[in-house]
Length: 139
Image (spheres, one colour):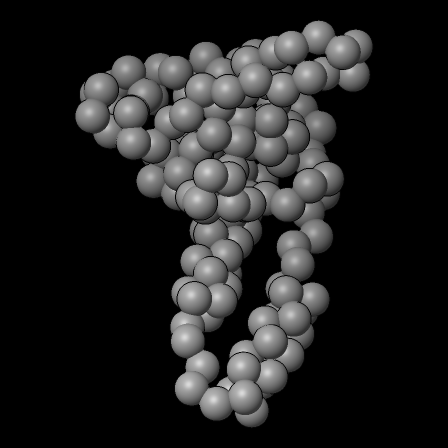
């Protein structure tokens, strides 16, 4: 499995493929769920938080996918309410928070060489320590 949360075009996001995998749902059903939530949320929210894209599947066919910001993910994930889905929501929330904190640290400007070395070492250590290990649940 890839990371739960990643940076794409300068924005911290997850995508419909990841949501489908970790929630144990078919990707086409997740796309329907996401599009329904985007419609309910309205065009302003949807334009900022849901980004349509494409990926190439195992058969070398282009397929749709949707990137979701933390806010969009939260909106979609609220509709999934099994015990397993709640545990997955917690992992996503923690990972969004960790990724944002990591990015904030990366853009902090050290004032001395020693601070720069400490910052680099701290970031590397945190990345290694916090890398999520998630198992998908079959449904």
